[in-house]
Amino acid sequence: MTPTLLPGFSRRRAMACALAGMVLTLSGCAAVDTPATATRPALNAEALALIGQVNTYWQRTTPAEETAFWNVAAYHTGNIEAYRVTGNEAYRRYSENWAEHNRWMGARSNDKRQWKLTYGETDDFVLFGDWQICFQTYVDLYNLDQRRQPARIARARDVMEYQMGTPRSDYWWWADGLYMVMPVMTKLYGVTGDRRYLDKLSEYFAHANSIMYDGDERLYYRDARFVYPAHKSANGRKDFWARGNGWVFAGLAKVLQDLPAGDPHRAEFEAKFRGMAAALKAAQQPDGYWTRSLLDPTHAPGPETSGTAFFIYGVLWGINHGLLPRAEYLPVALNGWRFLRTVAVQTDGKVGYVQPIGDRALPGQVVDRNSTAHFGVGAVLLAAAEMARLKD
Image 1: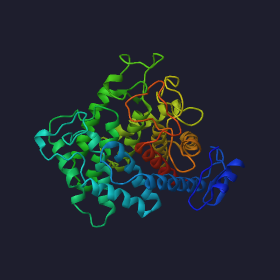
Image 2: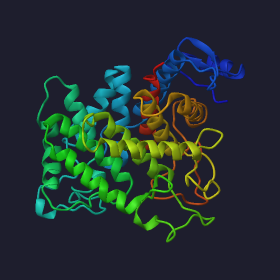
Image 3: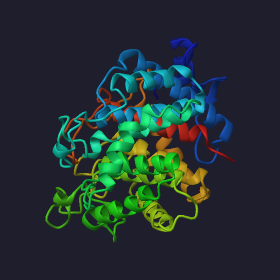
Image 4: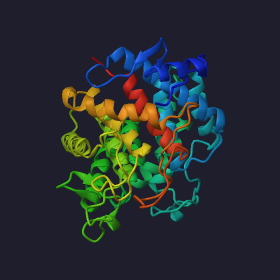
C-alpha cells in the first residue's frame, strides 16, 4: 500500500498508518474503506486531503504561466472544482494567473477569414475545440468574481458566436472535443441566455454521434478512423480508447450539470450518460482501474489514470445528482477511488500512470508511476471534488 502524506503530517506517521493496513486522513489513521464499510464523512475528508496533496505538489512544481492549449486547460477544469469544494484561494489565483497570462484567449488570431476548425496548434486554429476548452475556466472565473468583468468572456463569446453563425455542424469530429467544448456552450448559455448555445450544442452533438458512437456497445470511438471493423484491437475486437470515452463521459456530466431541467434535448444527453455508465461498469477491472482499450484489456494491459479518473468523476456525479442508482454504482466508484488514492497518487502528491498525449491505446507503450500530465491531474481533481460532495 502507498501511504498518503497530508500537509502537516510527517512521513513517519503516514508510513505507520500504511504498515498497519490503514490510511492517513485528516483525523489520523483510518481503516481502508471497502464498498461495504465506506462512510460518507470519511470519504469526504479523504477526498479533500487528496486534493490538497495533489494540488500542492502540482502548483509547486508547475508554473501557472503556460499555454491555453487543451492539455494545460484540462488541468484548470479540475482545479476550479478543487477550489469550489475547498475554498482555497491559492487554487483560484493560480487559474486566474493562467488566464491573465493568456489574455483570456485561446488561439489568438483576429482575422476571422483565416480561422480554421481542423487539427492545428497555431493561432489561426481558433475554431478547433482544443483551443476552446480554456473558455470553460474563463467563464467559471467570470462567475466566481462578483464584479462579472465582461472582458473575461469577451473572446469566448466572440469565437463561439461567430462559430454558431456558420452553417457547419461538423465541429466535433473527435471524442475529446466533446469534453473540450460542450461545457463551454452550456456555461455561456448560463451567462447570456442565448438559446443558440443549446440548439447548436445539440446539432453538433448529433454530428459527433453519427460518426463516433456505437449504439450496441454504448461507447465512443475516438474518431472515424477507429470505427469497427475498419479498425480492430490487437485481438480483433472493437477498440474503444479509455481516455477518449473519459472525455465524453465527463463532458456529458458537465453538460447535464448546467443544462436546464426542461430543455428539450436533455433526455438525449441523459440517455447517452446512463448508457455509457452501464458499459463502463461492465468494463471496470477488478483492481478498480480501466485499461486503455476498454473491451480488450490485453491489447494494452495495466492501469491508466486519466480515463479511470474521468470515469470515477462521472459515476460520482451521476450518483450525487440522482441519475445513477447509488446501490449499483457506488461500489464502482469506490473501487476506482481506491486505485486513485493508493496507486495513482504517489506519496509526494504526484499523479502517475497517466497515458501520454495520444489518440489510441498503444500496445507496448510504457505507462507507469512516473507517467504524469496536466490532464491526468485535472481528471483526478475532478474525481476527488465529486467524492468530496458525496451525499448519504
